[in-house]
Image: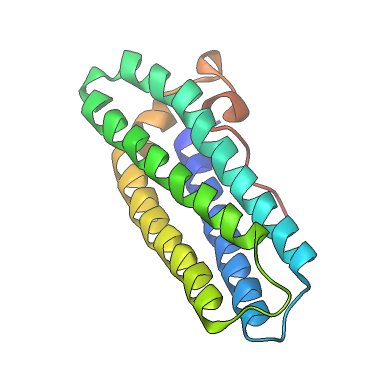
Length: 159
């Protein structure tokens, strides 16, 4: 298993899910989308997957990489800091979506879109940085180091 390649697939799937969530939120805020309950479920599903991935890396891949590739330790610290920042945005987004009204006003729509825009920008920057710094090292790990789930928190869906 090439864990670095799997990381790229996970990131691609998360990008696609975030784009779909943004589209669903945009449609709802424009008065043409799903009911709040479905929107909340979609947001919770995405946020849970993202959190599972990041906590999986923090507990799985990062300690292994820090041990096997000591020169990556400063990079890992930066990635862990990114995860904390993303986590706070995710919590804020979850709260905003959870509190979304049946007919959101302009201010509410602006707040939700702003959180989604911020999350999208930070995640894209984080994914590019992470892929550029640790994919090669992850690809050098073996099954003895763990599974995709134990190192990266989840596997990219197939199909």
